[in-house]
Amino acid sequence: MVNIVISPTTAEKLQELSNQSGKTVDELLTIFLEEYQVIQKESALVEGGVWTAEEIAEMLQPKTPLTGKEIVALGLLGGWADMEIEDSVEWLQRQRAKRRKKLNLTPQAIS
Image 1 (cartoon, helix red, strand yellow):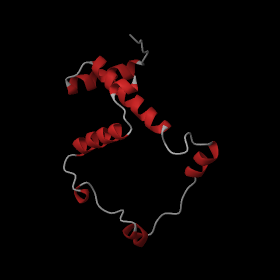
Image 2: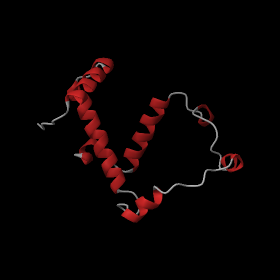
Image 3: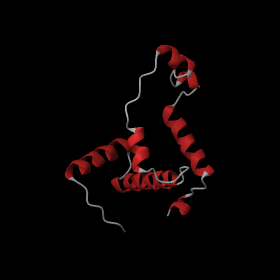
Image 4: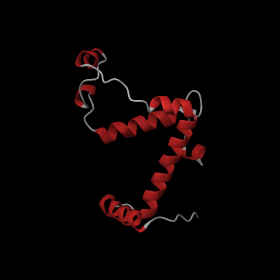
């Protein structure tokens, strides 16, 4: 068993989430840790590996805002409905499952 030290504020938030979701705090922490491990494994698999300080600095540089014409040309308009997504939570769960399958990240592979 792993012991995790958390702040009282975080403990209160976890308890509230537990009450809302009907899951125990331990179940919630297990879910969070599994998702964290998946994210860590996925980010390690990003092409090029770990980002350099220069790459991060470049990404953080302000960019010139797009014009309305550029936004339309790039197809950046719309929302969930335009993407034929009715339930965003269900869609996200499907995307995560696809990603895990693609990367062969089963719960056993994550451990």
